[in-house]
Image (cartoon, rainbow, N blue to C red):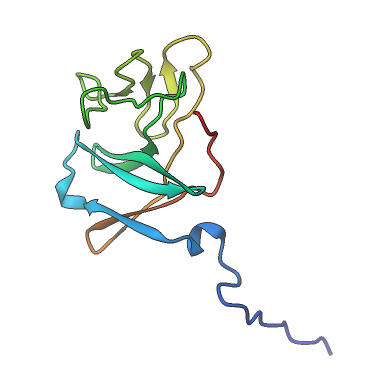
Length: 142
């Protein structure tokens, strides 16, 4: 007869780092209409990082506010991340364009295309948007 499976009695056992990481309130979902964004601070790896959430066609996505070409905030006009037609996220300094759903750079300075913005996991519960630090480390200085 096989032994019954052991239960792990450690608190948080079986949870991934992502599930056990603290979550932070970003905003109420109703406050960010399609085509709009909101910046917020999130502790990542012991450093408070400026991040932003966008509503792209009713889908919420969040990223670290840092262009992948050089480590500079993407919004030189505070909280403005979409290019004028609202189809892409744009670094206001170099004009690099990123796909809002994936964060992939589609056009921009040499070496930037194909790179991705650092994505921030989001959860929406009872109309409140929460963010958690990403599972993977982000490159410091980028």
